[in-house]
Image (cartoon, rainbow, N blue to C red; front, top):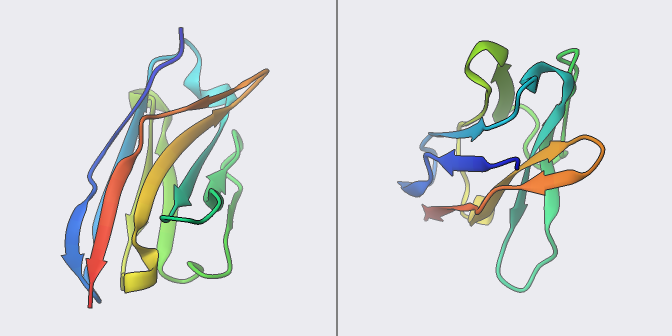
Amino acid sequence: QVQLVESGGGLVQAGGSLRLSCAASVSIFSIYAMGWYRQAPGQQRELVARIGNGGITNYADSVKGRFTISRDNAKNTVYLQMNNLKPEDTAVYYCNLSGARSYWGQGTQVTVSS
């Protein structure tokens, strides 16, 4: 049973920073691609950033240059460093593990005030 536990969300002013963490309970974390998605009220869930098992990353255009995804395979953890946050970044952020099937965390709320 795969479990993903996110942490690090909260309320921050525009221009501030947050770091999200996602700990995965899997036996061989390093083989999986990991991603961060977000869903704002009334909107569809969208990809924010993704990191492959080889470390290759890709980002949504809206966050390029501001967000950085990274992983620590020794800790079974993926991170999302978010800098220069904007009110439009406000959403519930979800961690995703992509393998033979897809797994999701419970989500963590990020609120950016103007």
